Image (cartoon, rainbow, N blue to C red):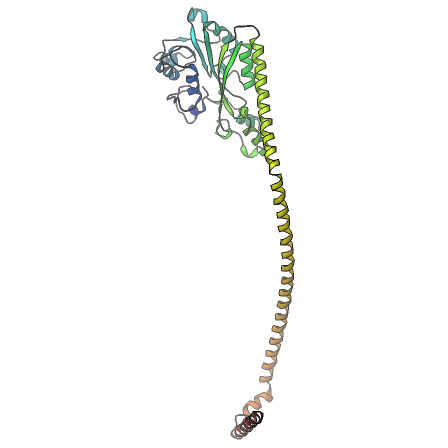
Length: 369
């Protein structure tokens, strides 16, 4: 089996899964729902019978065909009986005789066979008139495999898309072609998607061009990890061609839907054209205002630069004056003056001059009033 939900981190034996949650959306749950209730089931490759038990719990009777004898012994506890044999070589007429089934289940089995087409053709004879096949296959075109191939890797593993026991590989197109060649009408096709990074197939994400990654992420076939199908034998001539034509029409409808979606997007953009134009004009006006403001800022910056230059010059003049004053104070005449001005006689003369000066100031002040 290839169900991604079962293989991650499992230490169980190969293809031995347990605990199918019918509300989980897994491939196993999808297969069980498509089989239905209270029907007679021929299950190909039941392994340990993990799905057979679920069928039985829903009122189904199950006959299994299993290659591994030990697995068959476990599955027999849930089945009416289990036939041990190779589906590529088993004599179905001898083993099944007149038995007929409502559903033939091939859940991740066809990829292990040398000739899956021949098996499907042989099994149609053992279906009831309104019987159906329920089939699941892994998608070799999943984006993780494509990206691994781009870097030259196609590494087999114990389980998963590159299970080392796989003999056949299916894409959606080749799977549908197989059903066509087996004269089986595809009634339902379910996609089970898995993010590229969540796949067990490793690739170097840093080496993947962004546009390639984006294209794969939006491609339904590249995101699909497994396909699950319900198909019926086509009993009348010409139905195969009709089905192929219907599939072409369905693909054309998908293209048409995409065109409608793009037209809607274009229309929405067109509806906003006036709004976008006004916003563009306003942005342009704001840019012009900013440019004018930047011009004013440049003028102010020049004025500030001139002021700074004048301050530098004044500071230089102050420094020069200070130096000159210091030189005067340190000169011999100034030192002699400093010594003489403190003599008693000179102090009295200085006081008389100050008194005369103040008296003259007072006199002039009285005359002016």
